[in-house]
Length: 126
Image 1: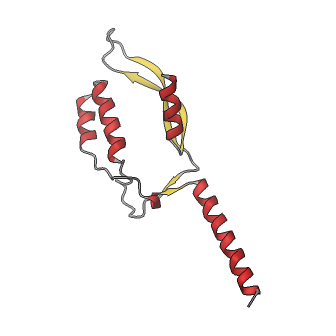
Image 2: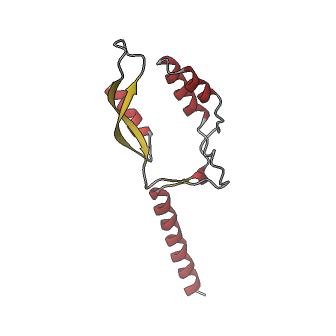
């Protein structure tokens, strides 16, 4: 419903919503049906950093993957896809060092500016 959608939009920071065409399977008519859906796509301003360089990272959080798995089961998605989801590794939470958002960069720049001002004031009083 609209309330759920509004909460989801609020919680998915770092993504933009785009319209995508989705092919349905298992339609009653037996014909391939295409519908329009909304998808969250990474915002170019959000850079996911992977310190290890491992292409299998970053891993989803356990909570996020559980939501995806529950939705896939509820909507009876392909069993192979559900098995693939069950095989994914998770992390308890997204490590802070993975995120490099515009807000993070502005905050870091602000903190550095304040520290530089304090250091300049201290040095001028020596």
